[in-house]
Length: 156
Image 1: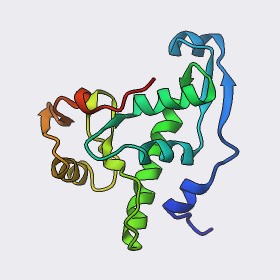
Image 2 (image 1 turned 60 degrees about the horizontal axis):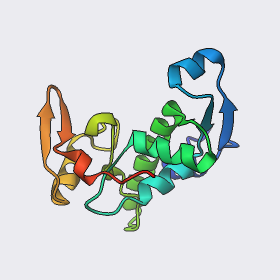
Image 3 (image 1 turned 90 degrees about the horizontal axis):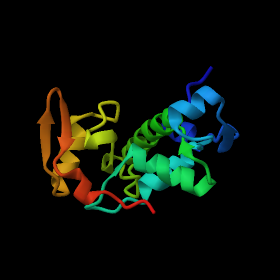
């Protein structure tokens, strides 16, 4: 079996998005009744929309997905996995000489932390964010964008 490229994974919708009704345990845990399981390209589209100087956390990505699909929440698991696929696909495109790639480095984990699962992480993400004017600070063993809240994309 031939392994899929990151770009192929990004473009494989797997019959997504889909809206699911949460069972009582899930509804209690997530404080909502409905959840959208997004497609990889939907997550990529949100990540791609973040302009230089601005940031987004995976929580804002999930909020935007929930708004788009009129659900209470965006799936935390698939949103994180698809952000990872988007980041790797962007670097795969960069390796092919493309310059119009998703600025994955502007997508942070909750709390403004760098994502240690992103390509070359966290050093590559730190280097690019610093080049865009953000200051990275150590918080225990993790790295965080200082005052990241000031640069967050607003979710309506």
